[in-house]
Image (cartoon, rainbow, N blue to C red; front, side, top):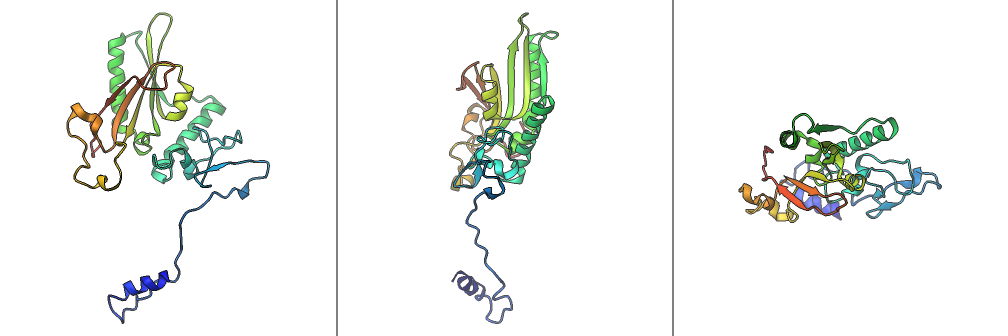
Length: 251
């Protein structure tokens, strides 16, 4: 019946049109489920989202099968309808995050980071250096931009016995993992985000731009940087700062 209905639409152009019936088959793609038949019965891979994705940790490891990791679109269960992990422009970065985790876990290769110290320059100058590092990352880092609200940079603060301050900028790390791993440390997190209600007709409507005033950057609709500070042991941010939405991504 569907083929017949489509054919009548084509027929509107001409009854002698050779392309009146241009299709051979109709392929119905209304969804899928993960094929778990490839696993032995002893490998209990649980799924979510009606069987689409494996249930995994924030570092893409099967919750019920330690040592079994998933990359690519199979990692999208962590950010389904939240970010772009189901598409190549997104999961190329989640796959890289998994690679970096395995390098660190198995070969002691440190996660990419920048380390700043106040010992030689003093705290004010070090914080100025940190501001420059963050602004450069916000303007140049593609992973947090494509995997908005999922991957981001985390700045870990620490004072040593001599009261000198260090800031370790850990790049492009899964945020859910970062809060678990570094929850006992004071930390600054930056991430790209959309407004919570920026979807549907609003995306192309007259009110698609939330604000053009830097003083009200928190009202931005399109992707914009958000920086949040967490005290050691806290799961809720105590301070937030927003930068204005900019469709040409210059901050």
